[in-house]
Length: 129
Image (cartoon, rainbow, N blue to C red; front, top):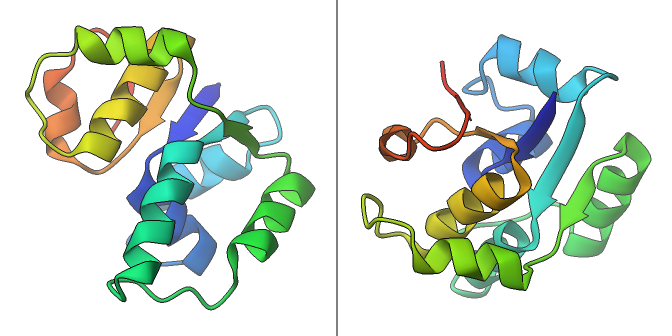
């Protein structure tokens, strides 16, 4: 399975947070799964850290190293993603989430999120609880 983790799921996974459903954790850690994280998630995390809305115990470089060790790919922001974003309905107003949704559509990835608003975008696969 090809998965794209949204920012909250990414943070829960990194923190071993019990809010992350065990089935999702198993899907992320399944060696047959291909896991990606959007660069927009790292951008969002960086902004939240700078605004002191989020505290990271490990820096971004450490997170990057953890991802590489676990085979988690960074998904850059491509023109094709932005073209999907242009046509994305405004069911969701969060700019970072909208970009992640567009990336999931463009790359045909299953998006892992607990955000109920993502389900309004029926044109792609959405892994929910």
